[in-house]
Structure formats: C-alpha cells, structure tokens
Image 1 (cartoon, rainbow, N blue to C red):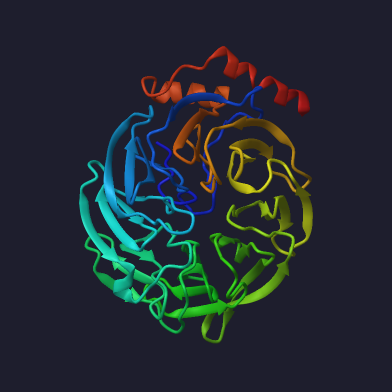
Image 2 (cartoon, one colour):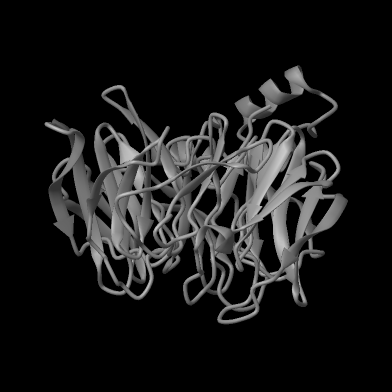
Length: 416
C-alpha cells in the first residue's frame, strides 16, 4: 500500500508517488468518499500507513490523537497532552509514523511516542528538558525519523536534539550555534556521502551532521523574521528556503569545502514570499505559495517563470504531474497543471470549516485528504487506469469505478 507516513510525505518533499490520477475534475469537484467531523480544532495534516489514517485536534485544553480506518471510521483517540491555547489555538504538528510507532510534538513541547495499533503511550519527553522554549505561536514541527533517531528542535543552545526512537533517550544535541526553534521541520539529506539534517530556525537556516549534531553550515537569511514557517526543500544539490512577511527566498548550492560540506548562495528572490504554504520542486522548477497567490521559479537561477492568483494564498502538494492547491480561506481547493509555462486550473472543490486553514493537502493511494478546522474530507481522485489496478490488486479494499468518474477524464483529452 502507498503510504504518507510523515509531514510532506515519505521524502518530506510534498510529492506523492501516485500515478494515473484524474487530470481534470468534474463540476463540483471529485467524488467525496467520506467526511468526518469528530476532530478537535487544528491545523495539522493527515498521515497514513498500514491502512490507517492519523491526525490531531484540540478539545478544550487537551490535544488528541485520532486514528481512522480507510472508510473514515474512528478506530480510537487518545489524549496526547496539553493543548496550545495561546495565540491561534489548535493542533499543529502532523503525526510521524515509523513501523509500529507514532511520534508527535505538541504546541507546548511535549514529544510523545505511541503504539500505532492501539494508541498506548510508549514514552514522553519535554522540550524544556533540553533548555528549549516555544516561539510566540508554539511548537509546530513535525518530528523527523532518521534511521534509529527521532529528531526535533527544542531550541536554544541544544537547538536540535536526536533521541533513540525506541526509548526516547538522548543520543546527541546540536553544537556550534544557538537559535529559537521557529516552526519549520527538519529534512534529512545525503550529498557527497555526507548525511545531514537541515532545518529553519529563528537565526536562519542551519545544517548539522546527522550522526553527531555538529554544525556543518548555516546562513542567517530570514534571521529574526516575524515567523519562519515553511520547511526547506532539497533537490539536485540545491537547498531552497522561502518565508513570509516580505522576506522571500534563498537558494543555496552544496559544495565541497576545506572543512567538508558548505553551502554557497546561488540566488535570492522576492518572487516567492511563502508565509506557511510551502513549495515543491519538480523537474528543475520550484512551485509554491507567493503572498496572495502562487509562483514558479527556475531552481538553478531563480528566474521567475510565472505568478498566478488561483485559489489565493494557501498550501500545496504534488502528484502525477499536477498541483493540488488549498486556500487558507473559504475551504477552496483546486487541481492545477504543474508546468513552468503557466498555471491552468483543471477543477475546484470547496469544503466547510471556520477560520484559517493551514493544513496541507495530502494525495496518496488515489485519495485527496483535506482538513479544514474540525472537518476531514476524503475524495476519490483516481483515473480509470488506477481504478483498474487497485481493483485487480485489492478488489475488497476499494469501490468499483462509477460512470461519472470515467466521464470526468474526457474533458482533459480535449485540451491536449
């Protein structure tokens, strides 16, 4: 089964491995498979593994972790600790799944490990144990599993910490710098044989050795910004990081220096001002949130290819040569082309909720998951060939294709 086991997918790049998906949605959007309204308030996104769906939400002063089956039925929910109740209350981080365990960092800095099948607590640590403190809007990081380590950012002198993923015991803490944690998550990158952890902080973007936490390189771009939210993106030797509040983005090229891996500035830009919605890199181009809309940049040079309003400011993911856009206001989602030649909307759907929607869309297993406030929606976005494949491999698991779904592909052919 195709899985989305952590924030931004299996490679933390916002890209789904799905193929054979609809290239155009029917009027009103793709078929709704189910909707759940039993969640607490929150902004976290879906993760999936082993025929289960995990997400979080706040109910009163408590944070809850929910597990659903693939039909949207609630299997269980467990108390995951104290909720963040200050500015913009609601759950933040997405659940990280690793084999038979779940990992979650709460807004107040509780790092918990649960049994994936039952929700039974395995161990718990606090960010304050490592001298950390949350930013003005709480911890929002989705923790990283790297080999036998669970990696997260308490902030401070031990800004990044790695724990044994089975026991929660400390293995290493970063050295050579001090920084507030901010709100982005860590990514694991291997370049030139060097394994490294890269993340955004209040002091800028930093990179540490994956096995020791030793600082390899850093850049103070976006230091002391109002908030640095998006997770850095890596592709083909380049590291890209863009933020909001008028900051824009920076692209760093990894090179071999006298002291090991270094990061040289390739270019900077004001043409991708990404508050929270992030970006994906595909075939040498960056696609992402830019202020009140969207933009495309050339990865190697930073050249601006296009800007578009589309559904307005929001978040995105990529699947099967298409972009899935989700507005932070009004519950609008859209299917769009992923091309440096321009953005073409191929369908829209609207979901219900209140306030801002900062959860990212997820496409996996032929399904589109949208979380808005206390509601979770699951849509069928499979094309006809995908439906045939799934029916042959697992006839009991998925419904047979409907005539409406098959007809929905025809308009896409007229455009080619």
